[in-house]
Length: 217
Image (cartoon, rainbow, N blue to C red):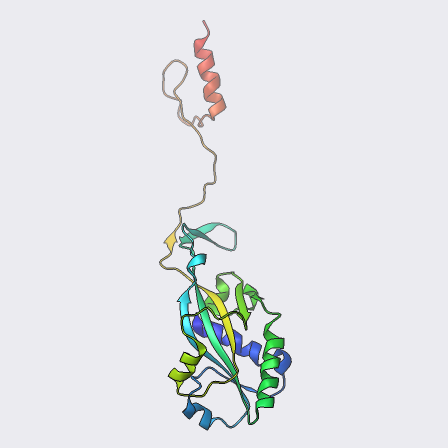
């Protein structure tokens, strides 16, 4: 699931306002060693935090339907996880880095909800839209200064981007075959004998009529 979110973000960051600019998109940790090795303008999206969004947790079961819209399996609702990315720009001058960050904002701000038909693999198969926020209020327990200190680098301008992605719950359970006939009740004949061979089942309104007939003198 996480690698599929990376795939979506790479396509978004490399397109939009940055389409045709030959900007590299990297998901590596932006350490001093990594910064020393880069030789082209780069957008770095470092995944620094993963945690469940417990407010989205649901109970019960979700039905899985086939192409005929028949329920064939059941599973638990997916669990949602907040994937927090530290987005930075790496060029030779601060002005160019600021331009890249502005282009990232222009590209990502309109994409507040990623539709299911644009998502790859198992992520798209769930049929759920995925929320995305960029440059919002930092809500994680670790501050940005602590993150940069752990990376061993100097503090840089950055955008906090959060993708809240569903993770499928396992296992799945087979569902019983669909009901194809209405309810029916088999009754004995009016004289107490069993129904004749091949006699069809009586519907509830027929049973009621038979009871009324028995009450007559």
